[in-house]
Structure formats: C-alpha cells, structure tokens
Amino acid sequence: MDFLLRRIGNFALVTAMLCVGPLCTASAQDEVVTKVVPKSAAAVQQSFAPVVKRAAPAVVNVYVRHRVKQTVSPLFNDPFFRRFFGPQFGTPQERIQNSLGSGVLVSTDGVVVTNYHVIRGGEESEITVALNDGREFPAKILLKDDQTDLAVLRLDGDGAKFPAVQFANSDGLEVGDLVLAIGDPFGVGQTVTSGIVSALARTKVGISDYQFFIQTDAAINPGNSGGALVDMDGRLVGINTAIFSKSGGSHGIGFAIPSNMVRVVVQSALKGGKVQRPWLGASLQALTSDLAESLGLDRPAGAMVTRVHEKGPAKSAGLQVGDVIVSFDGRDIQDPEALQYRFVTKGVGNTVELGLYRDGKRFRTTIATVAPIEDPPRDEREVTGANPFAGSSVANLSPAVSAELGLDDVADKGVVVTKVERRSNAGRLGLRPGDMIVGVNEQEVESVKQLSVLLQIRTDRWRLAIERGGKVFDLTVRG
Image (tube, rainbow, N blue to C red):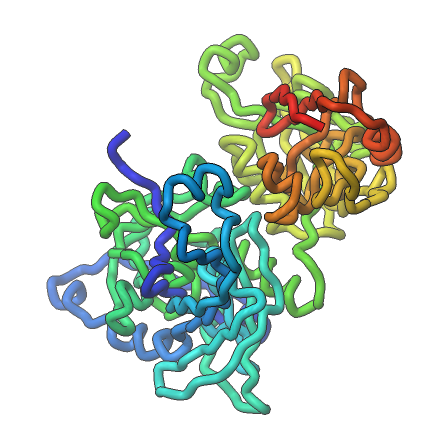
C-alpha cells in the first residue's frame, strides 16, 4: 500500500496541537440540532465566520521544551569505536529540543486537551500554552493516556478566565455533516479548513488501542495533531489525530478521535486519576463472511465471544463462547473495536443492554460496566542482579494490569513487564512494557515470586521465552 498513515505531528521543528471543547460546563446537556438541506445558492454561500468566531478563540498553541540527553564523543564517528563501544560510548550531554503543537481549551478555568503523541517526551519539560489573543501561560500535565492518544493539561492562569469550546455528542454525527478543522498546520498560524464527515466508526486505522474514528475530508496537515474538529454550532466533535497520505500532506482523508471519548479522558483527569475503563471479561474476534454464513447471519457484523473470564461481568451476564454481540444499548456493533469504544465511553458504574445472537436466535441481556479486578494481586517488583531482566519491573498479570497495558483483559495468570530502564540489561535485550515472560531456562513462569526464584540461579546461558503481540520468541543470552 503506497499510502502512509501519519500521526499529524511534526516534532523536529513544529508540532501542532489543537484544543478541544469545553469540558464540564457546556457538555452537561446536548442541544437537539435540526439539520436542513440548503434550498438555494444563497444558502450554500453563507459564511462559516460565525462558527469560527465561536470556536477559534479556544484553540491554542502548545510549546514543549524537551530536555534530551545525548551521548557525545569526539571519537563517536570512528567506525572502530562505534563497533566495539556502541552508541553508549561517550559522555552524556543535555540539549534542548523545542516542539510546537495545538490544543483546545475545554473549560473556562484553563483545561486543555490534545494528542498524547504531541507532548510525549515532554513529561519533565517546560510546557507553555499561547492563546489566540497573544497571552501565554505555563501548563502542567494532568493526565496522559497512550491508549487513547490523548493528554490533558491545565494552565497556570492565576484565576484567569479562558474561552472554551463546548462538547457535542459525537454519536449525533451523520455522514455528510459539515465540519471545520482548526489548527496550526506547519506552524504557519491558526488555520481553518472546511469539509464534511466522510465516514463514521472507522476501526482499521491503527493509531491507538481504541479504533473508532471520525473520517473527514477537511484539510488536515502536519501540525494539526490535537486540533479541533467542530460542528456548525462551533461545538467540539473530535480531536484531529492522523491522516492517510502519500506525501505527508492532506489528501482529504483525515481521522479524529470522537468527542465522547475525549470527554471520558478529560473527566478522568479532573477526578485526579487514570482513565477508568469498564471490563467486559471476554475475548472477542471479528466475523468473516464465511464465519457469519456458517452461523446463519446475513452479514459479517458483530463481535464473537471466544473466551469468557470466570470472574468477569460477561460470565455474570450469561455470555457464552460462540455468542455474537450484535448491539450495544440499541446501537449496531460492527466489530470488536466498536464494542470496546462503546464500553469505554459508557463509563464504570452503569448497566447496558447487549443484543446477542446464539444458535440462530436473537435475544437481549444486561451487563454491568465494572472496573477490571486485580486478581491475582499485582506484586510488582523491580528486577535487579546479574540477569537479562535487570532494570525492568514486572507484575503478575490480572485483568486490571492487562487493561493498564492494553493487553487481553481475560488473561488471569503469567508475568508481564511493566517498565524498562533504557540503559539496563532489560533495555539492551529489547524488552518493552507489555511483554510477557513465558519461560526461563525451560521452566514455565506463572508468577512474579516464581520468576524471582528462577533469576537467582546462576547460569552461563539464559534461555528465555518472551511473548509479544501473541507470538512467542525464544532467546538465548549469555550469563
């Protein structure tokens, strides 16, 4: 495929982050909007200016000043030294790297939302937000969520009041609705482009763990990451996140995170915690045409249950392996990604109705949206000593830990890597958070306690089994 999916940030020089709609005040109640077809040329020629005036003041620029440590040596470019000493050879030096993006003010007290990939690496850096009226304020990170690719900031405004965009209900969007994209493409300054909603519920984009995007043909370019997608009332319907492109510029295929997902992340930030995601307690797979036909379904739509956790809400609701979930609170479910999105945006502490298909019959059941359980206990530990995993942190796998790392939340045993120090044995081995430690020296690993015992055994050669992305890799490392 010639097209390249790009997160629309430009970190080397300029990365635009746009802001999102207002969060708590205006989002409490969604107004009913009547949509009409233009009946004359004059109606079509009306200006977007009133919409822009309403939304643009809440779109801001976000400047991130990164402190980057880089190894520098006067002999660094000598092939001999590079071969025998590697990239660690030399003295670490600190340099400053600046990036620019966009964000959206979503509350009058200075809450800003943007893409996480825009500020990634800036956690220990200086973040400054510049408003359209020229005012600048320092900002701190309230929440960063890699699974949704969203981050929430708060301005240090010393009691100042800020313009804010109202959240719209993104479930109310229809294909063909007019939308505006507001951002700072290529760092040229605030820019507004218009288009329509080209498609809804795009699930094969591959940007974040939650695959459910609004597609638009409004021009989105590098620098628009975190930008606002607004409706004709100037309300936030999405956060511009990625484009399909051959050249890196706009080709009329852009993707935005729906505002209903954004709202969940912002509300989580204001409550002072992480994003709390409901737990289904079941593994799912998409339907193929052949599978749908064999089950007696007229089309391959839905999410088929392939595994049920014994202590999960799916089990309590009566779901069985082979069931096909076809609807969620009356909305059709096309695939597992759509169901995941619906669960997350519903939030913990609610009850939903699932439409099921089993043995040729359709029926409904209710299921509670509860937080994933931590069973077995996490028992997270930092690995030390003379072994390949030194410099990593590991934990017992549970639905709660799996949810944090974006793994299958039905797994109920095993050991997972939660953190990795870059300059460590584990870092040099190439371990990543989310990797499963399956075996050590021909012994199956089922708990952190067991792993700790195995790593105390001295050996001149470590035989390791690591699972990543459903594949198991066998490695041999010298002791």
